[in-house]
Length: 323
Image 1 (cartoon, rainbow, N blue to C red):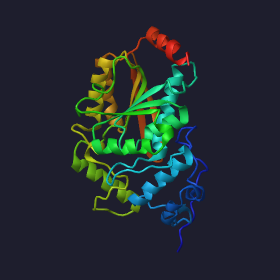
Image 2 (image 1 turned 90 degrees about the horizontal axis):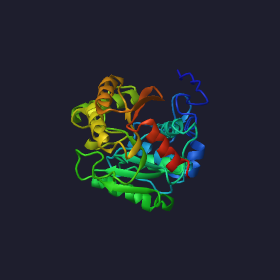
Image 3 (image 1 turned 180 degrees about the vertical axis):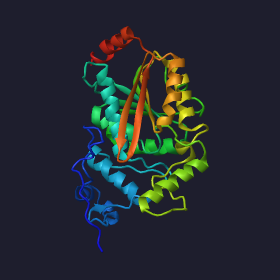
Image 4 (image 1 turned 90 degrees about the vertical axis):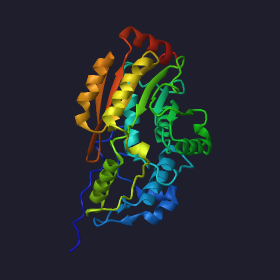
């Protein structure tokens, strides 16, 4: 007996209103832009064109097609085993970051090269800087402690000339430092973004991957093939997401006058209480929590600033409104 065809909404309404990926993937368009994707596109049990999201090669080619079709990226690739991020979710973060800046600027999004964003852990994919530059014209600093990932991100930039002027990648020599060694004292940063390692051990990361694959394939999976990839430093760190973010908050205080908004994604709601305590102890002047949702996954961005209102106004008038 054949499956009854699902009725799908025209838009993924949980995504940001400006997200280019709110509508269902148009595989005819995407394979027209990137013909290599076509060999992975098949009809699912409901008769819809799709790919096998448990297949790492299919996921990578989908990313290549999305980045080329929507963001003009002619070359994009990552080394085997490195994190292949979901493009709609990364785009959501960028759009909410733009809204955060607009909220401090009478509703107007600051755009252009003079707006500088720092991507903490840019990764091999360089996806946040690509989307932020294409959507809002921002320039980026991308920090990375993995030399292979940094080499991959640099290759993406070098093969896409429009990115060369806008993205500055910097190697973080000390993995315990987040801002020191990357953020210069005389270099104002308008906003930082970060998708921190979620798990607290390699075993926990593997278990999470198996749960994801089991859900995608509707059966129990015991072999840890990563559909989105990921190196140890991308997937886990000692203490997991909460420890990483608490360290980030503590270190951000030393650069409080250098940056308008610090932000990070928080995947697990249970981590918020500890994060808020750390922000209170650090003396943050203002804290905001921005909900995000991709599919069935619920996440949020936590943002904080150490600038007082008069300092914020001075920053806005001298940097944003002088553009």
